[in-house]
Length: 243
Image 1 (cartoon, one colour):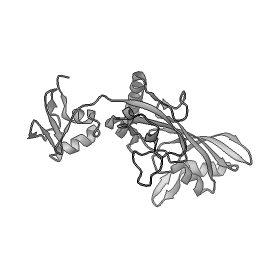
Image 2 (image 1 turned 135 degrees about the vertical axis):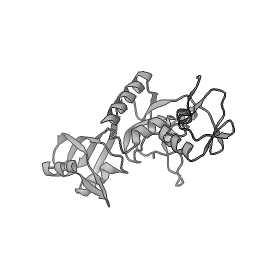
Image 3 (image 1 turned 180 degrees about the vertical axis):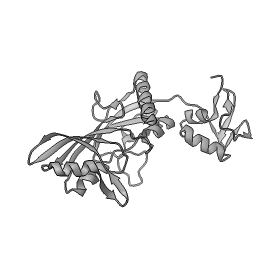
Image 4 (image 1 turned 90 degrees about the vertical axis):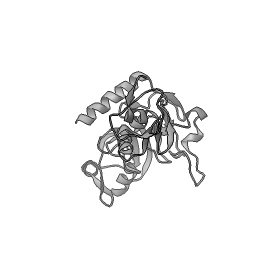
């Protein structure tokens, strides 16, 4: 590395996104070689020492993994209640990676794990409607008017309207199986949407997040995401951001 913009250097440490790095610079929390830097376009080199809020940072090699979360685990690093977390299933070498979004304890499926703070920001920022695809089964038979209600949006919390694209895959009087696409990131969104219309979710599995898919993984298994897949993901996010 000859030189790079300061915000990119900070983001490459995994600390935060470039946008957040710009805020830290503007707040006067960043120093380079002992001098406070307020210039957003400031360039740093390999030998420069960059501190954020008095802590020395270093660029890290970004890692990207797919993980198939089984039921019974929560998506967090630590839990004060002593519940099992996804990190109980991961090797020590991956414990520094963060999940992109969450799945509740009873849900299963795809979680992207990475130390790329900028990518996490792009995948989760509410201004970019990143699609997430789920296979969902509820008890009972859903009727067309109920599906229309969910598609138009329901208020799952005061002031929070949740909506989804729903495709029915199989239905009878006992259950309805669907593929659901979300463009929002609300807590327990799908479960709350069906509770709103009086249905209980029996199973919920995320099978895709943006361009990254669950296919090829067994429950509890993790695999690195290939560079070509990350490139495809970035191109997809760039196109979404321009809409």
